[in-house]
Amino acid sequence: MHVSSSHQLVDHFFRHESGRLVAVLTAEFGVRRLELAEDAVQHALSRALQTWGLGGVPGNPSGWLFRVARNYLIDCLRRHALELRYQNQHSAALSESIGSDDVAASVDVLADDEISDHSLRLLFLCCHPALPFESRVALALKLVGGFSVREIATALLITKANAEKRIYRAMETLREEAVELADLDYGSMQARLEAVESTLYLMFNEGYASLSNSAVLRRDVCEEAVRLCRMLVEHGNAAAQNTVARPATFALLALMLMHLARFDARLSQDGAIIVMEDQDRGLWNYALIREAMDWMAASTKDQQISRYHIEAAIAWEHCRATSFASIEWQRIVELYTLLNQKYPSPMIRLNLAIASMYAIGNETGLQQLVAIDGKDRQRLRPWWDAALATVHQRLGNFNEAAAHFQDALALTDNPTLKQFFVARLEQIAYGIKLS
Amino acid sequence: MAKFMFLYRDSADPNQPQPSPEEMQQFLALWGDWFTSCGPKLVDGGDGLLPTGRVLHPTGDVTNGPYVEAKEVIGGYSVVDVEHYEAAVELARTCPIIAIGGTIEIREFANYN
Image (cartoon, rainbow over all chains, first blue to last red; front, side, top):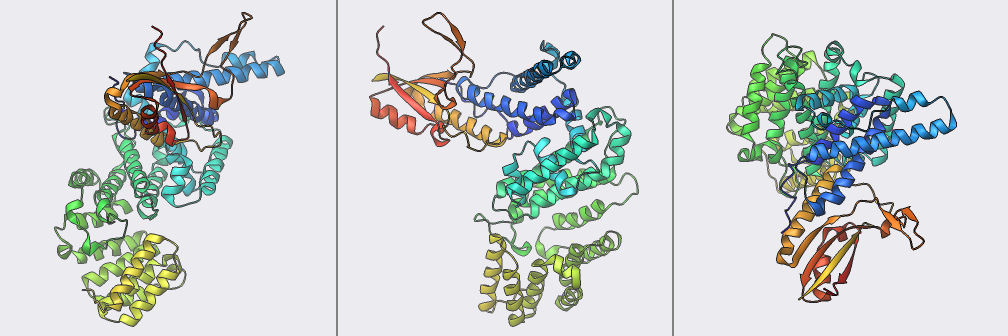
């Protein structure tokens, strides 16, 4: 009777293990061998696929993968050193610098906090200031997250070629910068924390908002941002000193958890958008909301207010309301107003206008939406058009509403959005006024 | 009832895109589920065969091998007990390796012993 292997590995074990192994091997062999480390890990996973399927999962799957990957990497380096020695007599020193292939038993079993330390450093490496933001997200998803280029492209709704280019250029830059994981001491990690937070925030947003037709991968990207943020806040807690995270990091985690908690309610079974008014709060994950509350409490330890604090407070207004009707929109308007003062952006102006529509009235919402013009308006389309159409539909101005939904329809290729706009146009044709 | 050996070979297409770690794990789960679904028909789950090897030739020479094309290398085996070849083929059809472009060579045991 064959022991089924399907239930012995936790969800996403291969994906997360891939990230852990790349981090550990890069820490040992250096950033210039990062690609080789990736190859070694891919080799180990392929080998596991060949043998575990028929032979069952070994007792220590992590140790097994680490041994195979590390041996492969050392073999590659030896072969390369031998080639070099053949070409150049002076490379004896090179082959001496390669690790011994007597893998000590203790190396098999790295402590959990050692692994997460390497993984965290690898994440910080991916957020190097020389790298553009979108590249950091793609690189972190690949190296630390264990996502393939294809999965990244699908989740973020970019072409595979685009994803490959971002990653390739990012790796080139890292090579040029000649950084090492060991270079990242406590001080430099502190300095880079804000960049890491921004990267995780962007990663979450891309997964959340991409409207890619793979809901599974989008959710996986959001969960990865949360997982990495958790790694960030939990690092150093045991030692209780030199914790890398700060209150803003806790607020960021709370914010992401509150959005993730409501993820399943946003789309129907067929992948159609469900507006806030119609979302089923019974589908929310209250365990995540409770966890978010704890992190929000931790984030108020000192008086610093970051954008994540304010956005978390807004998310909290949504989460604590027992129904759509009981949302305190006036409070949300105050928070968006504050956010717009400190960190202005077109999207925040749009959200403020929509909140004002609910808090004060349709005419106010309309005025604020129309006031968003020029470049800001261009950056917001088709959401600006959709919001304007919605206000008109609420006011019973069906012709204007239909015209703006038609504009929105013409401005997007996204099937999910198109389906939503078409459904609203049908509502308007039936004279359905929203309240 | 008769015993048959399943000899598994990987996909023949070298240009097939690399599966992601997540996809590999899903494939592993499919193998486990398939074995479970075979039930008593599966006499021996078998094992994988590592891509290393030696070939001893009639001349007495030993070469590293098998150095044949990658798609011809046997990746593993299992043993099943079913009525006849048709039943063995039907069982093999449901194996996940087929879905990713692999092949299964089905050979009936001679029962010499």
